[in-house]
Image 1: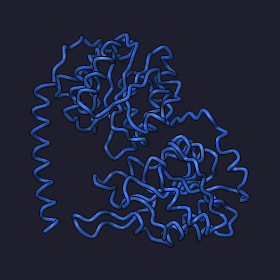
Image 2: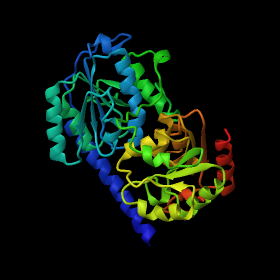
Image 3: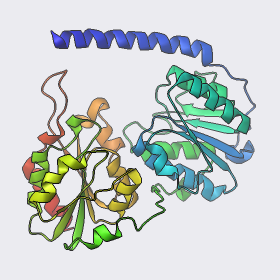
Image 4: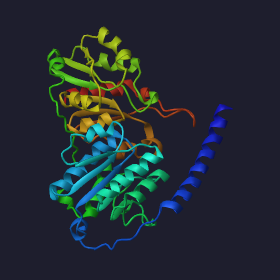
Length: 377
């Protein structure tokens, strides 16, 4: 009965969302068209002096991958102003990035969105770039009110709000790694494919924060073990963590557990139980975790932003992903780690339509084998 009501509620919400989006499109899908000079180089041909990137989803992993676009544009056009709309912990990823000139914090509140848009409008951006696969009403409103000279979006040829569109299955394929999609945006702007570097950037100001903590580690090498994903179903259980910890016993490898918020308390039992397990007490934000990853040799994590941080620093990675490519069947391809040495392990599928996938159902022997391969690589 519970599953029945869950299904009915989902159908109703999908129906209402579709109605809201149609109404929103009628209201906000409007723009004075600016003549586009069509040539080989959109930036040069249209005298683009400023670009605003919209990353209002707050997703840390997306922001990390997006960093390649800021750098590659600045590499060719160092005088272009780059603005960025961002929110939450994703702001920490870019706050020290020298390739971003201005960061605007996004809040979901409708009045705050309008106020933000009016502030941005005063800056008179030449080009706005949006990455959304589906635009919600507040996002349509933001793009409309920002008043950029040109708007670039994804699959937006049938929108009045957008002047240029990156087209899926033509400019990139949905099954390709996310970096290929961002490359498609850069090529649309006129950058040359052979000159684009698809690596990521994270800038850390204080590289000495964990110097004392790391100096107390007696093992030769260090492995970052991240227990946490986007939900409890995508996080490692204490039992799974203990199995992994035991695989590395007596191998001269320190295991550093990372966490967020008050999760330190539930991991402390592992620190007391195992001499090769270490947990720093003061992980305050995602850049702290990034610094620990930068100073380590290996990373093991569920599918989350941690794998992209590890890719930034080209660490050896094992990542555990949902089976069959997740909800859309392509997550393991699109969002795979991007280091030279990466291994993806899949957990088992959910048993029923309304059950959750449990990341802990990976095959233990496969995990053990991959860990041993990684540390001996």
